[in-house]
Image 1 (tube, rainbow, N blue to C red):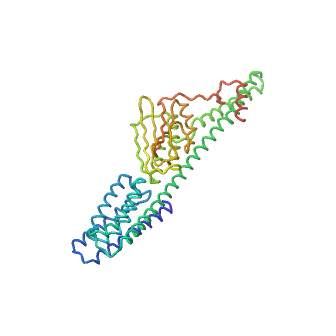
Image 2: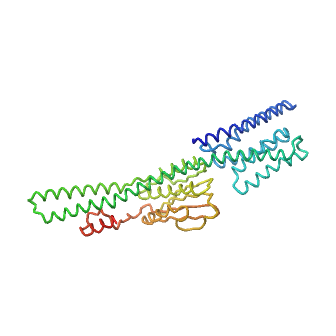
Image 3: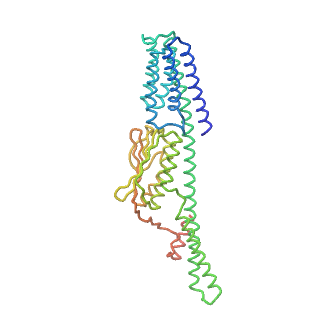
Length: 397
């Protein structure tokens, strides 16, 4: 837990327990029947669990559907008791308004929260509640409490989202740097090694076998071939996380950011390394875009297999209203543009669809992809000396 989240949690707990303690003191001071007092105390014992469950910041934030259930329970614990405990219970309207702002999507949340705030003065001026407090006093109290609750919880959510975004950005930077180093090793060191090997073998053909130089050139050529074989093995197994690893990391990161996550997976499928690595990279970039470029409250990750093809989709809400359209990768997710060519090389597709604040990123690959050919592979043992020189020069340009 970050320091900001910890401060928010403590502040929220003090706000809830302190406010309910004041209400309990007012209830106990009233000349009510024993049964009514016991009922009020039971309600005040239930309310902290409901309120803290509703407002809990990440990583303790409950799933979205659970918060809806708690919101309905909170309504039942707020309005009916007002008819019995009257003005003493009106202080809870602020907590309900804050819960509405945190649970109901906008703009409906603002309208409902305003209705909750307005219900206080309406109850005061009706015959249902008798109180010495004025309607304006109840309204101001509701607004202050509701805005305070919303501000504390919202700041905790922003802190958690920022931490998760920084974590994912660091992870993306690490993988991109590894890929860059591997590519440089493949292009520069590999081309130099194969150039040494080819030139040594060419010199061997013009060197008598009985001379000492022939043995030296033979050892140089063998060593160079072995070295570029090792380089080929290193660059062929670049450090990219497998799909199942990325799925687990994505769920953990989104949960820490307070984003409700649902993952759908097919039965166990044996994925080729190229497919698993490519989809893992797509998922990594997609989750990074969710954290950095949206205000998402939910994210659905679905992996399906159909007719020899594997499909990965990342569906989230909270996309800015200025974004929109369908097609290949663009906009805030421009980091995915490079992955489009990677999926195309494996016979797949990578598309995005943005509509009504919802973004769906979809990558589809064959389960048996073609081996992507490298038209200028400096590690090809069949290359001639002239071919090697051209690749060697091109790699260093």
